[in-house]
Length: 230
Ligand code: SF4
Image 1: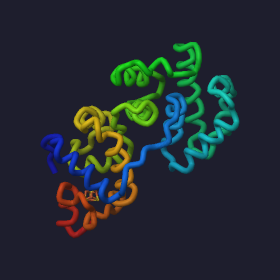
Image 2: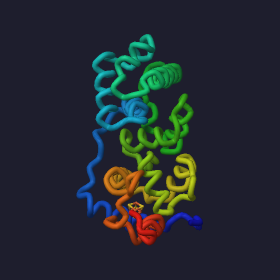
Image 3: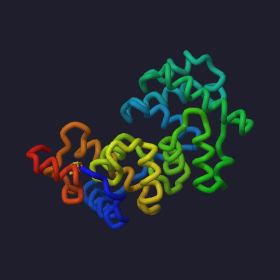
Image 4: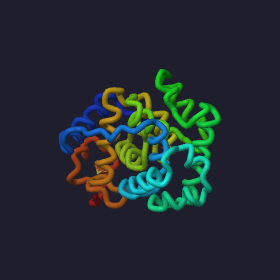
């Protein structure tokens, strides 16, 4: 399949409407302060929601403040987040981020971002060590109520199959293409809808194309069903 161009806005809105109709009313995530959301997003990488929530709760129980997490021996932080997987990588990463915030802000708090424009918040967050566009978008949308569109593994896979991004596009490239293309008023909603769709219907292995409400809008699904798969 050759990629021609990003979809027009009507097509994006049609996907959001159909998924919302199928999945029921939109529900946002519990809103956390920006530093909490930043740490929670790091913990969510390469693990399930259940395990990352467990790791986050354990970290908060073990250390009453972010300053204490930053100052603790890395092995103790890793022990506290063990439930979230790859703890020996995530612990030093979290500590580096917290230390850098403390260095810049004089404390571990991101309240100073509140008056900034979305693009300035994104620039600040992605300048922190190991923070990429997806993590920054999660903080923007889930914590600060801004109109961002995080590209996680499900959004990346489903939008690639829908032909919204070129084949083989990296998550960064997808972020560049879709960040400005998805209308601001449906970014959060569509992100949540695509994640649910990716988990339940458009799975990585054996997507259920024949029963998918997006089949007529999806080049991958049409090719798959024509070939007798899916
Ligand atoms: S038709 Fe298939 S590939 Fe396309 S969105 Fe639906 S499940 Fe995914």
